[in-house]
Image 1 (cartoon, rainbow, N blue to C red):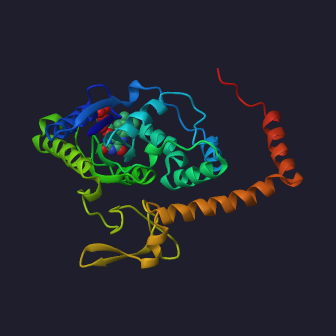
Image 2 (tube, rainbow, N blue to C red):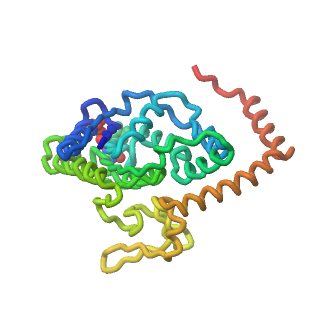
Image 3 (cartoon, helix red, strand yellow):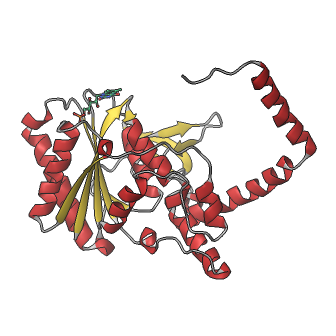
Length: 312
Ligand SMILES: Cc1cc2nc3c(=O)[nH]c(=O)nc-3n(C[C@H](O)[C@H](O)[C@H](O)COP(=O)(O)O)c2cc1C
């Protein structure tokens, strides 16, 4: 059983070391382990070209137009039974490099999209996406911050896991951690997170989330978006409900029916894919009109006339 550790920190910094500690924990319960530093790789930003979406829905697999080290990393992830990410906290959320990984997962690694892509490719005799994408897998995250500004990172992690529907085992934040290696409690916790992940990988069917229970009873998130209509929307799974305060304890109440829409369920993913398809068809028809084309041309002419800056 293979556990892959991925650090998004500086060389031999807190993230590299905590990730290594987690891998030591995993190894102590029988895992074969491998460590990767994201900054040793050449990984570029997603440009939003949607080549992946087009190839998925045209039965041509799920290719990415960017040729860099991402596919090498993806291959390592798809081969692993479990993955542990250690990521610095930047501006309260995950560091930019992790957001780039999330974007590069984006539509291309979405489990619902890959099921649809497989069905289309089988029907058209096209290219079936890598079947390893649809394999169950466990994943844990450690967010490491130099202070206690850290309120967005767990939701970033949860959103990464819900794209391929990998099962999160731990989603932990370490605050005030610049001298983390001299803090035995935090170091031990990283080791335990590694053990938890490896044990979960041994028995995927019975793997359960082991982290903080959070506020959303569906996905454990603590982050909510409050609409002006009085609704609370879970920033991770997208379920809509209300937040109540019962004697100082926040609870998130929602109608049972909402579970069908949750972003981390296949039902929710298929509803989302159908909504995007409807919208794309409508937008496709609009973009073909002469009115639309004239407006785009007017914007191009405006920018050309304003002499855009040239990159040096
Ligand atoms: C651009 C930047 C933004 C940061 N923002 C936060 C923050 O919002 N909250 C926090 O706790 N630490 C923040 N930090 C501290 C980093 O989380 C800390 O330097 C990092 O975990 C060190 O990791 P490393 O030793 O593995 O490189 C920030 C650091 C940088 C460079």
